[in-house]
Image 1 (tube, rainbow, N blue to C red):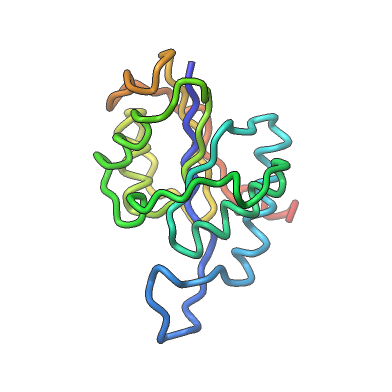
Image 2 (cartoon, rainbow, N blue to C red; image 1 turned 30 degrees about the vertical axis):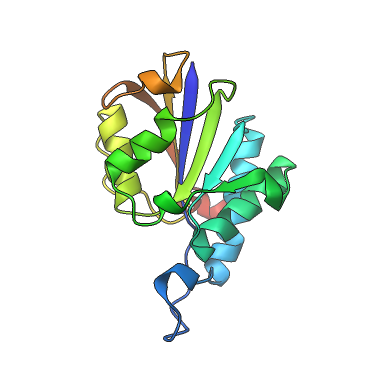
Length: 167
């Protein structure tokens, strides 16, 4: 069995008008939400084998916060330039090309692609993966290459506001 986690980057800042989109950092809310969600996933004993992030500062910063909670270091995160600006077919290619030694994979990236991709591989209807939302989809296959659209089962969709009183 394979488990795929799709994590949308935490809330980003729009305070720096001169920054390019790829360089936008996390805002204060995002800086709180990322470790909170990382801890939530850790507490579920759902630590993925591999973390792959978009090169966008907000996505990589989110990945770093999760990695810290998971007991990993920044160098353990693979940056995949394709994730930034990818469509669902590119995400599927990234997933299908992973080493089968990894049973679980967490991608850090962006909407609207992450929501579209989650719905396509699971046949679910998530309206919108919110910032710092995490979706887990399981596949009853031993090999990543066998994953296709509609072949996954949504296990959960979790996000910070679902736990507002705990933050």
